Image 1 (cartoon, helix red, strand yellow):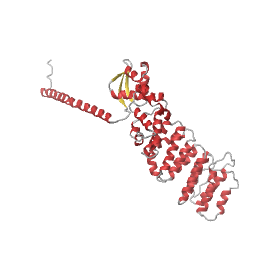
Image 2 (cartoon, one colour):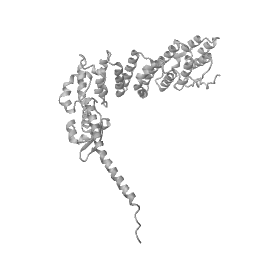
Image 3 (spheres, helix red, strand yellow):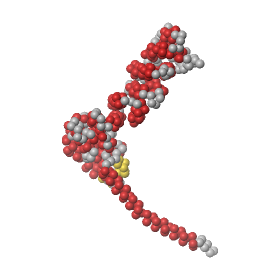
Image 4 (cartoon, helix red, strand yellow):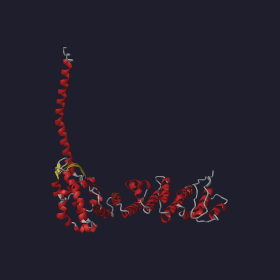
Length: 419
């Protein structure tokens, strides 16, 4: 049964296309799309509608061909009507069998990216199509790529893509995306994130891509880029993840990027004093190659130095003077430096400003290797021994408490005082 559309305003500058109409008859559906096209094109003769009506048969190929003829016009629909117009189009195209359906949908997607409104309404249309397609439909790749491209043109919209970053490997599997498609989407994402000043997100995309690459031919180029991105980007401190990647390890003996690995290896353990006194000058050429400022990287190393000092003295008081010496920060500025390190998530600590002490209760290691496992084992063994030593004390206290209870029970109730 056909539903009635809302009345259409004849003014080309101010009109409403009406509510979405879903009709069981393909010919009537196509005629409705033809009506949309005529309104958008200010065609009072309703040319496309007439073409549909002229065909007495319900030949699907002919009717879908008429829809294809009108598709380029639909991008001009008012923003308020975008979703309903394209829902109608999808209802028709999804009835087309075989490869032609994918070709038509891909044509719609590409047209929306190239000529559609750079507004949320276009994102809504593409999101609807993405959700209509089955989870394993390869066309979802193209729709997702289109969503990313359109989102980059809509203020603030690119952030809506961020939650999907960590899911990309599983999504690629669902879409059966080729290696070339994966590379293309990764490159698109990190470029757009970088241009949008979402540097952490761009770094995360490259990191996931690097994990996907393993030790393939272009993995070394990407590994060197990721090391540079880590060094340049404020707020990145996780070196352990990088250290575990085969592509990073492959740089070690590489003729082109061996110097990048040497810098990376230094970052795994260098103290701030070592950095400013010798290491920054030693790696000056590599820093220039990667576009990294030694002073800004030094700020990051200062925070890592505090974290390393906290890890070595976990639970023990550390004086402000020690931290000042280790970081070359004036003692009266140490509180601010410690707070910055806490806010960076590298440590948890309690400060005693009166006595100028800090006790680190949790610290993040740069890398968690054999030495750290040994330290953890020693700490756990110490706790185990302390608990073992405490057990006899607890047992003795329990026995004494039981003995006193039994004495009171056998003595019976106290005699009431005589009057």
